[in-house]
Length: 62
Image (cartoon, rainbow, N blue to C red; front, side, top):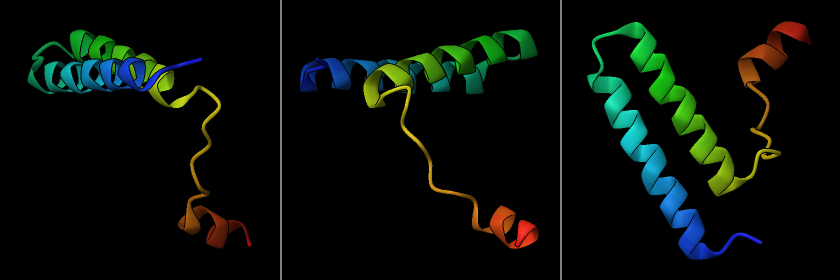
């Protein structure tokens, strides 16, 4: 079970990776930092967390 301390750690690491991605000049490095941020966010908030549906996408398919 993930603790609040763990969640805070993963969230902090994700934010750091996003900053590094924004500062990266090499697109490969940028993608690597985004990938790491994604992994940390999944650890912090759960890999099975679902985002709400995109209303624009629903309108197009409706």
